[in-house]
Image 1 (cartoon, rainbow, N blue to C red):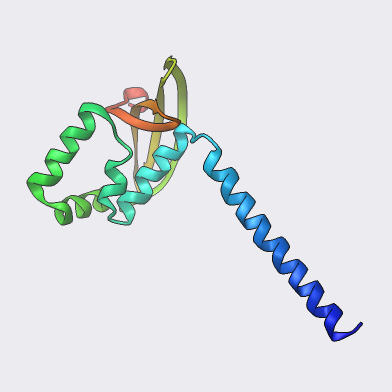
Image 2: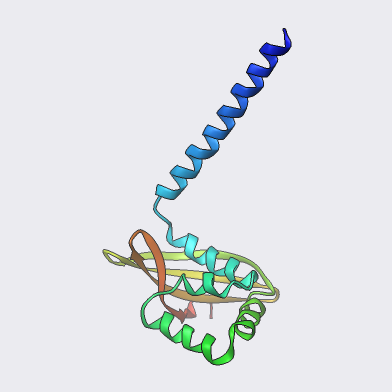
Length: 143
């Protein structure tokens, strides 16, 4: 096999890889988000000290109240508190999921920490294909 033929094969493979990456990114952008993605995003934003990303996962009055807390204590303090909340988290378990209405659902999540578990109930609202947290409450199912 000549050098020219090898170059053509390498070029063809490179084009194929680029096309696959591009098509994959387009598919990901058009797929609707899952409610579980919001919970994972919540943890990731807290671990990364990313307050804007964290706040973007909320909606309505709950988001307004969180924004007031951030303004009151400052972004640095708020992001440190977020990270501290999830510091000893070792896992999560999605326990119960039920539709609340056409655009809302309840999701019970067990946060597993070193030495204890904490169950939270999330009310999620679908806004233009993205699931946002409308409310978080304690869930007494584990107690």
